[in-house]
Length: 281
Image (tube, rainbow, N blue to C red; front, side):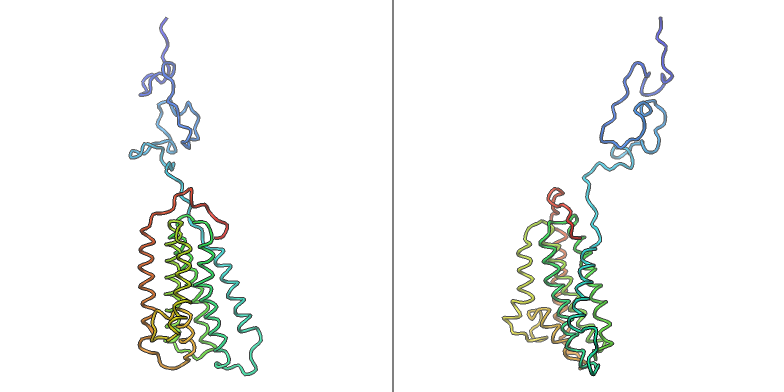
């Protein structure tokens, strides 16, 4: 007695009774029944294979790389830092004679407090945590957040000080350049999960150690004076004319930051097993 062929006799996969269906790898994300995948009918869109890789379309088979999260922890911490600094240095009660001169010392201390956050607190927290996924991009997001906070804090100070626009621009340039340099060092140190202690020591030496040895000569000392000394001197000059060399220290810091960012971007990233996500984001 002849064996009756199945309805799928003319299929490229052969008769159903005479050939077992092709096994489906367990790692393929296929939601269809097993038999439907071997009937010879046109494959539905979710089961079609890519002509380049041979895998089903829309299914990722490479290593899973976590996307960097927005720096929510940094935003909350920086907001609390600025609010606490304002309450401690300026206070909710206005002075007896509210003039620009009476607010200037507190505003200068506010700038110093923001520099402490930028140069010491922020890198100290990031370099103390385990490496994050895509450390260069994560450090870039942190840097953008810090720069935005500087603009929010700095420019409204013209309402209570005698700073001209040029003075605010100089202090802002110092702050942005320092933020770029710190962010580049954080990206460089966390890109390979090594050198974090050296990066923090370098930041402390640049911001505190070298200026203490130089003696704080302001614009004449250039980049060696560090961000704290230069910002303190520039914020205390008031409505006076700008010194022609006031822009050079910020330009030197920005150039150094660009070099550090380029080096950090070319470093080998941390393997996925060595870069777990952290609760500090």
